[in-house]
Length: 283
Image (cartoon, rainbow, N blue to C red; front, side, top):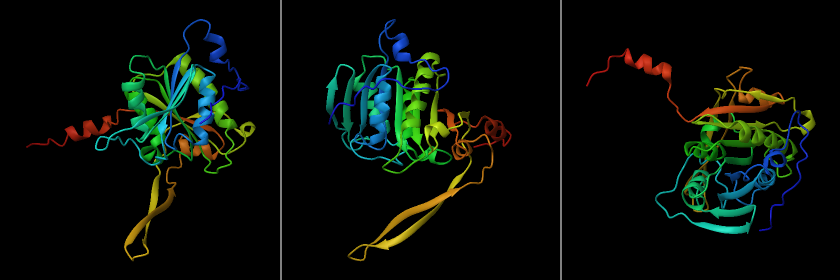
């Protein structure tokens, strides 16, 4: 494992002032935790870590292998392992056999338990985390776990599954949002889910503040047999785009906007509480 180099900030987004150069002489460097669900060796987490280093001290804790689709799974039946891969004054890199949510827990409750973590960033994930995929996403879960721990948190995804993915738009997006969250903070129980469209950075139209699209997966399960004729199953499907709203995360990335979707960790449906009270349930 080689050092993930700190690169100079070259963001040219409007009104962007690098937080690192503006504030580092005035106070202690922010401590930024970087996690993902694609594994510690993924290209995306290296790019995000490089950006995070422009703003402060970085600690990376990530799964040793891909954990996509794990959602908010945590490990409590099997033992968790944690191994340090790299150490330097401004960056430390660790891998775990756990999930993205485990990665945050290990950092908050063990590695950095005596320090204040200023920000959690999760990603860069390759693949959209919009619509129903938000629920299944390990990338989003990393940010949600940070939020549950009282830390401002952002999940970043690029709508591109290709190994030759261009991360320039994602890096510019991350610079802008990391600076904004470090400056403004986030309300309690709220984190950000950010999706970047699969186009060149200079083709992006801007940011859209969005809601989660009410789309769902049309799933298929294919039955196959192994070499000794035992059945196994392969899951597939496609997204049913039933929500035609122009204010959704899915619409934004499909129309070349960066989607910024605020997530609330309280899943309570307030309207349904009032409705249930009219049922006069008795026991």
